[in-house]
Length: 204
Image (cartoon, rainbow, N blue to C red; front, side, top):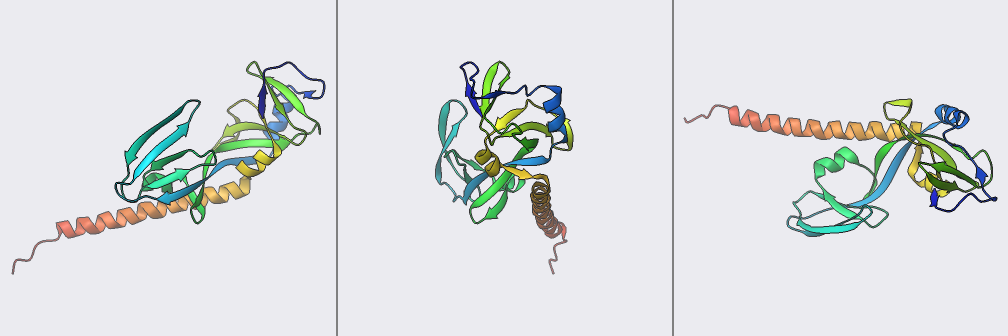
């Protein structure tokens, strides 16, 4: 999707994304999980990390890490540090030093027009190529409920960040299972420590 401040062009097909027709098609379209792919690496204690994030304005800060934290680097080159607990809560390792994290759910279908399209959303012109996807955000635990404005996603971007519902649900369940295993490990360790602390001391 691109924002174009100029007026409509004759080589683009006008589409009303808020029309009943489009919203009805989106409401019945397949669901997809939206994910990000990041690289990660464990940190050492007192390692100096410069946190760099671009949220419209570049900003950075320097911090010292604790052992076991994770350095996260996304495809924009942004990097930041999170705790090990947060890493296992938010990401699922897909291969060594590469993990995925889910950001939400959408319903989507391929551009039925077969030609470049344009639409006005919130007063701005957005455009999509002939092979783009029509997309709308939906509620995570209620996939038929639309919770945002429709938009276009180019085919290459869609292929790299949107996962079919069945595959996404598989990763979600594995992520949940991993979280539960980590929680159980901590519960077991805590119970063992408590048991040692409460055990009577034998002074004989």
